[in-house]
Image (cartoon, rainbow, N blue to C red):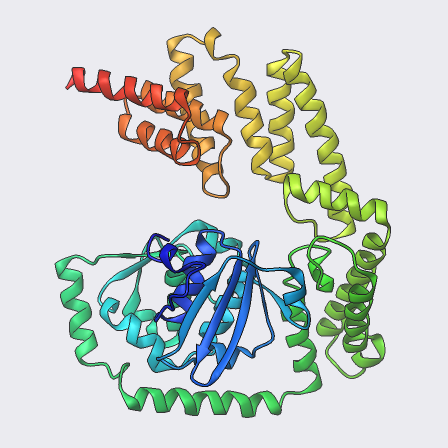
Length: 443
């Protein structure tokens, strides 16, 4: 961001790749507009709170002239958004990259072809990336070259959006990859031509799809919705006009009259999804229920059906009961209830609260109990941190446990994470200073 700062609200224009500029601004939570000077054409896009507004097609934004210039302004108002379409920021960036030319993407990735890529856990939360990430699932690091042919756009998106990092190969690994590269034509015009031919072939197949294939494709795309609001194109707030339009679109596509002649499995799948859509629509049409769902999702995450909503209400009630037990000092009972909730729902919030309650009992544990209990709490907190950020209270505890096991580097790393968010946190600063001091004396 230090590179961009001098250009914000100034008359200076940036000469930079559009996707890189967009990613830099998004990563620091910038709200404002990017003015685009693309040859003789001038227009702007708006960024605000993780969303993007534009009326320009993705193929234009993905293939801006290399001489395009940009001016960044932080002043923006809602009137500017009129007539523009809203996109999720990361989905927008992915769409731009999907529309970029092959040569332009590979031009950036070519220097890294002999290295590896490590994908951050938060990438798994992007539902639209689910299929694209399949080749990388379960791998701590993946060879870039071997994935370039089919996944080069995904790799570029992960890197530019900071959802992945380059991991350097060893000399031995790099030598092997370089040998494979020398025998490959992945960066040649021939490979580009083959990709175009493959794309045309796929398009022809698409045109020849049967009605059943179309229904399958529709279900594959729509069954991936995040929550009851997103199923109808909404973002956490009910809008009857938008929701009704989307509900009608679903009914028109998979109404029972459309399912004549297709396989029983596909027909059953379509009927179940239509029933689910109907239940979700009726659910969020009730203002009180819609508000309740918003509240629950803010606390616990996405709700995708009526069944999940009812279960989450029970879960919330149990969480409140467990929290009340902890407040009156019944920590053992609270921990047991939180543990029961976690085993039933796998919600990390319950697991964290369980361990916070158990920690209140730590002063009573002897050294043998501490060795076992501390290890369990440490492992649980690390597990939680893989899917969401720990509370500051949990982070302090984790640092103490690392110190207990004389793992000072990891303890300091946790405290640094606290200080990154809260630079004036005297408790974290004091703990870090004490740990480093005593560790130095020991060594």
